[in-house]
Length: 540
Ligand code: SGN
Ligand code: CA
Image (tube, rainbow, N blue to C red):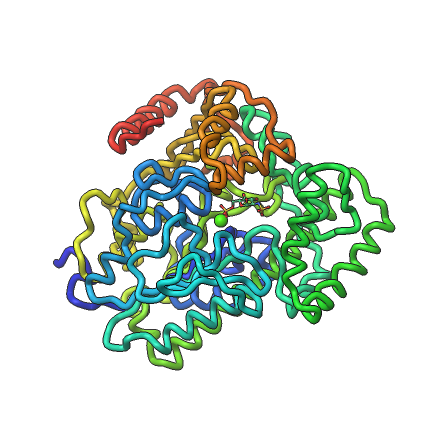
């Protein structure tokens, strides 16, 4: 038996579609109550053609760390990109370089979000940093840094450029195309044609919406990602009528909204205003408070988020159609995923970062007619460290020994693979910055999850010192912006554990760490975590 199905010179095309912050709860193939009211027929079609991974995870639930992990096949502490604004160690080899060297035509289109220019690509057409929804700026091959505005909606433009590349590529080579959407990142700004799509839909509240964080340690309460307190009325919910120019927070929120609105053409703006203005008038006339106000925020957050997803789903449909029409479907592996999961009101939150299920998980659907049975599912644990090894395997190359992940190929047959990992390591470092989620690492097995939250009080001062000498850098700008809106609270030393039995408590409401009867599993999981840390040389 050859080691890999792919080692026989099969070398299929690779189409990798990655969204930004696309929660599993927002894909109807995964069957959540929200997605039933806002289905994603094209992404579902991909799942019908291929395999749906129910247990796919990231190693650090944040954009740039996930992208650095994708490109290098390395954990954050190995590739340098631990925090959002920290730069990747660009001396590391990117899998795109290996594929290019092996005769693939390589391309990336959309959100790049790395501190270095795209490496190992024959073609790129990428957004500036986080990118914008309306009439965004892109830099093209060989001109990274030279961003030029294009007219249209980001998701549509990214799809157009992906198709342009497919048309113009060197057809003598297999291709590897990465389509990285900006959508559905905050501030969830829908395209004109979908802005009112869910105006009259009332989405069910998640079971944990009113979580009071009892039994959890302090991090679950000190975060700044609750819909109630931190989802901004002006920027996030698009109610500029509530602009408060008297505070830095108010000014920042208004500037954030206008940053996107002022990019629109008068025609685009008229359609967007025609939806939000009457909605806002009605909302303001009701003077909602308390729970009613929080629920209004939730409904309108989900309406916008799902309207943004409508464009993503349409993009997937266009790409599938292109492959079908050009007889490429049979020899192309299509991967659909996100840079991480997202909270859609679970625990009362938006954003991600925590090792809790909704943000640790990421959607993953793979179709490959030659080797993956239609409508199959995988319940074994996979992680984004596995993408680079999979693509390298597809190209018929040997995985470099230093890469910790594993090619997903053995799972494609659909039967449970005996010699597969039984646990995962996770590490989040991005504190103190946006959303103030405390640092933590941990392990997850098929049944349990152990998390260690840690960090010294005064880390704010450490970060301040670190960036003091670097005026003008992204890190410095980001930190100053947060400081100016009084974002930081005094932080305390923390060092505590949480333990969940995910099988009996999938919502992770009951931290059982230290409870009677858990000593044995605690000991086992602590040993597992210590082994990961030792073997991977984790240094904090
Ligand atoms: C921005 C967002 C945050 C978000 C980070 C990281 N604020 O800073 O809400 O957590 O990106 O997101 S915003 O006001 O600029 O939208 S990530 O997807 O890039 O990791
Ligand atoms: Ca993201």
